[in-house]
Image 1 (cartoon, one colour):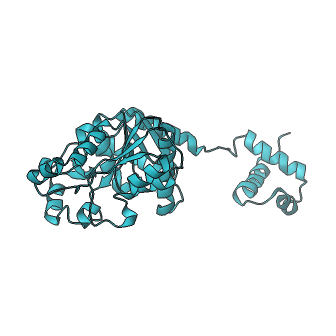
Image 2 (cartoon, rainbow, N blue to C red):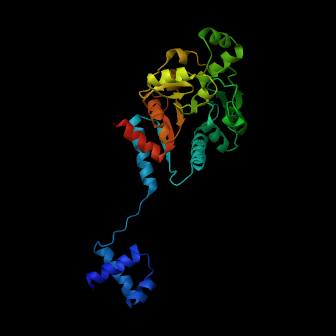
Image 3 (cartoon, rainbow, N blue to C red):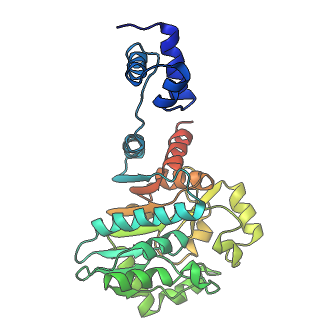
Length: 315
């Protein structure tokens, strides 16, 4: 039975737009419940009302495939942080990183970890479980002025405790004043041994630093304001294990990078599993540079950042 089109539209508006219940519509229009139900069904059948189910996970799956294809990645993990505070989003990113790493680790792996707030959050979210003969090694030197919540040593210690792993710390400054000073540190047996384990590491876990004054390297004087401005003029967009690069993934200051103690960008490219975990509009250029430089082959990020990466790379 086809009802008067005006009545079909009126009932559809009351139910779908005004959000009235079917009983309220019955009362206002003096109609029976079965008739209201039939009018609503007819509104759908005639295309007056269209019902769509939006599946956010479908979009995320598409984004993951797009990232893998666009940047020739080994894998990508995209999380949904819509409606979350920055702190809630950071925790969710940490959980995603910890979950991914938990599934990846196997006996006899060597896990290299860089310090930073993101990797510290991953360590916090990591479950306690023992993996046979896993070793954890610091990927870069330390800053001596760090506070406990910034995790220069906390990251590797927490991973080691939760995995029951043997630890190898890099007890050197992250950046030294000259090549000669660096050679002195490298002459130490413990430092050389740790650097060997950095090369052995088959899994590398990193956050991705953007180019801002809030960075630890700048705040603690490892990068002066003059050097920061010079790096900016030379096109630096971010740092990866304290090594600076531009949006195309090219090193922008060979002298500075040569005075940095830890993993090299070339070594990072050779890792079977090089995981970058980062999100945020302010980090899009830094993440894109790391992807283009092939410093990472696995990316863990959020939906908004993934879309911004694909958009910026297409320009």
